[in-house]
Image 1 (cartoon, rainbow over the protein chains, first blue to last red):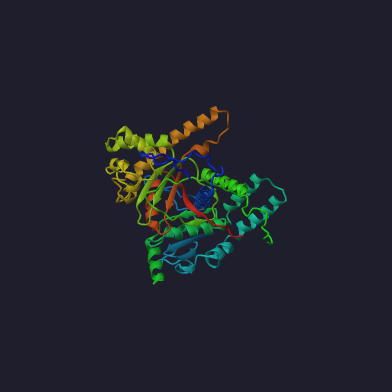
Image 2 (cartoon, chains in turn red, brown):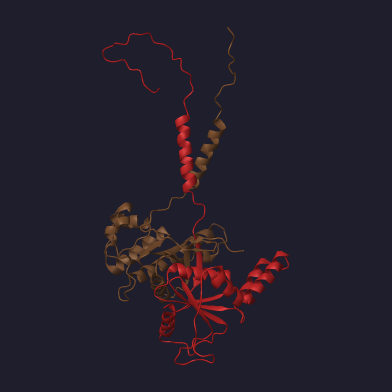
Length: 212
Length: 221
């Protein structure tokens, strides 16, 4: 089609010049093929969602020159100990076997990732905040309170005495997926105070005996 | 002879509208496509229900499966300032060409000594470049700490300029939007101890508010 009739050097073509009879239409099939190919490519490679971020505030490091006089008393806290795909937890203070507390030394309980494990546990323990959230959420729906009031009430209730506080300790085998999954569960359960802290050797020993 | 009836309508259909539509869609997807700059490592991020989108002015640390650390920053102007500071501290000279390439580079994970060579490489060669990542475990030669520290300062400066610019335009911007944010992009298979060490570097610098990159997951109802 796109050949250009060029008379050879020998001058063999002697025929009359004829007006072309072919129609003026161009065959568009290849172009359309290409267009669809590109369309398929872009549709398949398109990613509409930008990556999301999850923010987490770590506790400030304790200045060695100016240590706090007293460990703040933790009430209504739960400590999660993470290992490779395993979660252990205990409530309240940690009492090693050497110096048992009022209920004897701390025992670790095991739970699992997923709806039946840690999600149910957190929903039970953090009933206060969840019920508050429910209450204000309903008020918000009925337009009794404003958006900003709702958010303020929610953050207030998260910091309330009755709200559950969570400490997270990880051992050397825990993966980032385990950690993020747990944080995610905490966010689902509307936990306000999350503190990733260092694992104590006594806790590590207890964990090791449990894993075996 | 009996005539054979030939259907009169032409057997070809007019495809113009369909082709029009196809081109419209091609144009749309082409323009909306944003190509990711090729990163030196592939990281498979964990998923969460968070729906916060990644902010603008960021310092991004990538931790791969093996615990190697990579550094990236979003703002080109801040990158220029950062490199100048780092070059001064480690006494490594960069040519103008290298500085220019550095400002448009994606994540990098190499020691300061390797950096000039790394900048000169083509993006494909960078992927194969064998590097231990930015050193961050050593307390005496913690290069990551310097990168974060200078990066933070440079990002604060560039954020402030951007804020003033917006304000001069007559808008009412939120100063918090222009402050640098710190983002960790961790591989889900990476051990948390690696991330913990990097987080400790941040906490040493009194930067306690960190963000993790996650892919979206539907929230339970």
